Image (cartoon, rainbow, N blue to C red; front, side):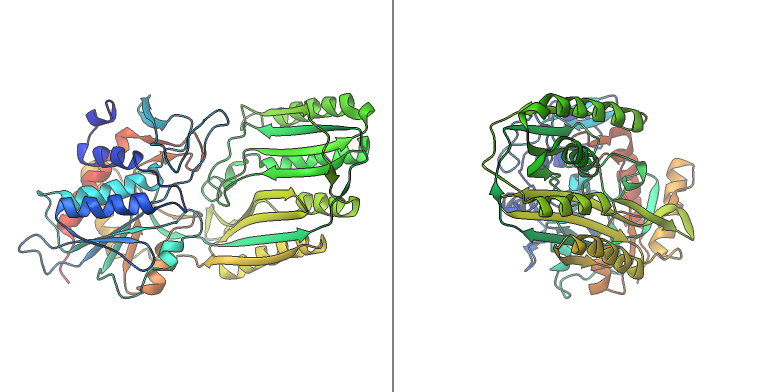
Length: 484
């Protein structure tokens, strides 16, 4: 806090710092839920935890502004728990350590949680402020957005009273998002009977140091997927050096491009050195293929104790084929917004060990028919390998409304305050707006926020200079919300 306490606006930065001290990884939100309830009580505003585990705060209108349209400010309380290999951070217990460098707030070896801690901090600042002028305001802070938008999906349809929804989970200052992609989780599994290991040696092969990133916002940047790159090595090791697969672990978050994959292979003793050379050759190849994108590729092999069992040959070969063939990346752009990705998939997690293979893929599309297309494409591929494929967590896209009243108000104020036009866009990232709109279809919706880069990675950072103008815009917008 020694550095952050000097940043402006203090009302947001002090709340964000307080959030960094409260563990809040997705799936473990009891502490932050209580923290938010305690905060509201101290701020003197009403707060409840709804049946979906969301926190809802309510602040009455400034006297004389009771007739204004009611506003819901919305953000999510959870953060993606990613850390560097050398970090000993425990996301369920430890506070996030932050530092400032070159005008950005960073975390030490972990995700920062600015996604969406800054949105939560802004809601807190509004709730505790004594000098703001506004109509009725509600703060909706949802749970477990990052793992499947569970809080929004479980939001009751009768707890919000707002006419306008301002989602505070966008990540580029000066851009107003009016539409986003829908998504769906694709889960494939295959059970198998392990077989005895008849090879003399074993290697653990690790690919790491990739940039990873947000599987929606950064899926179009050509970043390397650790699972898709590892399979190229594994196939060669099997085909050319008699290797056999024992285990595979790659990726750890469904909505993050996997930056690390690790396999254990068994092989004849005489093939150990040739396979080590193959690993080195693969590293050189990847560095050349991704030379303008990936700068810290680590690809290495270590001799390890011989595993007792292996994946059966036929299952192994089918899984390798499936990983190779499974679509990963952009399918196509939106025809009427050609700069925006329409449909994509992320081969996020692969776990093969102990008689079970499990793949997790997050597919996204702003069209329901194309979402169905990519699901069927991937399911067809994985089913041919004998895997059982199911889907879950489906949410629809958010259809853009360029004539939105709140959008036009924000654009007007943005130009007054900053002297330039704001940018209106549709995002490929999933936002909770579509789900909330499904429950409250009459709301006028827009998404905005300060600038955050590399969310879902250990290089996540927030641009300090973007937070104060974001706060200034939010304050004036609340003051100028029209009457009902």
